[in-house]
Image (cartoon, rainbow, N blue to C red):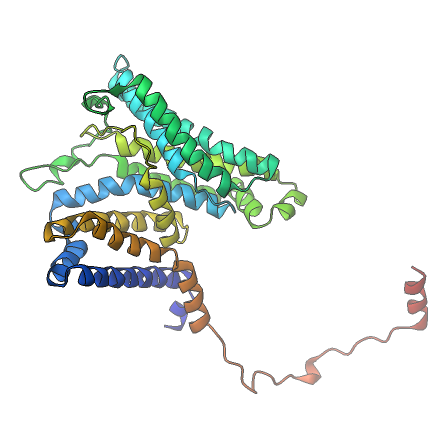
Amino acid sequence: MKKLLQKDGFYSFLSSMLVIVVGLLIGFMILLISNAENAWPAFNAILTFGFSSPRIIGNVLLSAAPIIMTGLSVAFAFKTGLFNIGATGQFTMGAFVAIFIGVQGTAIPAPLRIILAVVLAMIAGALWGAIPGLLKAFCNVHEVISSIMTNYIGMFLVNFIVVNTIFDMGRGTTTRLPSDSALPTLGMQNIFTDGIRPSDINIGIFIAILSAILVYIILEKTTFGYELKACGFNKDAAKYAGINEKRNIILSMMISGALAGLGGAINYLVATGLSMSAVDTLAQQGFTGISVAFLGLSHPLAIIFSGTLISYLFLGGARTQMFGFSIEIVEMVISMIIYFCAFVSLVKMFLQGRFTKKSVTPDNLVVDVESIPEAEPISDSTIEKEVEA
């Protein structure tokens, strides 16, 4: 038990579980206040609906993939000393490029078209992420301010381009994505099915998992990752150590943007042919990614689980409408759970301080005077030399 209490991973897991439990309890109180009679059935739906059938489990994994990617985007920047609030804008740019290639690139063979859509979505996200990176590196503009601005600029820019390129006036959204432009399913729809309807799950979840593993390797096992983190800890010290801090700031934001852009592609390249509406609303996946990163304490591998958990709670939360709760109440409950995820670092610090604190006793203060080496006497000539110097 003592060894367990000394492990950082134990406190990371325990703190994450605690904030989730507290968030769920507050959410349950909101349900009680709103509709006490149906509070427990609705709360039970939040806890259990995600496991109600193989098809629902598949849908949980489907919706988890893009928010895992935005969580990785936020976490990567955070690990390098940057706070990427712009994952939403980068997600939107990647999503549009993926849809555009999928709709307009029908002359390109389907497998190549999908690969092209994914790669170009990453490039679009990286270029959009480079804007706050450049402003931070060369103009010392705080990345939070600039990335918030690029969120709105990206949203309105994409709306403008959508309306003038692939907008379907009859449907009020982008032209529906052809089925052969969706990410392959590898037969998983035959596994994640309830016998009547299959899940829309595809390889997006595997892309998200592989991305998390790759981010972990880059940050923890490579010189490049060490340099990025060194700039985050202390860019002045990194500069004096010979590390190009401006280049690393830009690269960090570009990689972060590429991850968010990939999330946008995964979110829309699905068999159901999701469409992008030209509305003045920021994509919520980017903001959810912030909570996912906090809940996973910015550890790439932990984000796989935190993203899946948040997706699980989202699907269960949507189910509560069947018990007479309005969508506003549902959003309040889910938001409360996500809100408490932001406190996971504070909870971890408290737990570590509480259980690793060493008590000071008189025995600890006993010093063996005889073990202290005797200081050598300083001669007058040595003092004179020091004064002259």
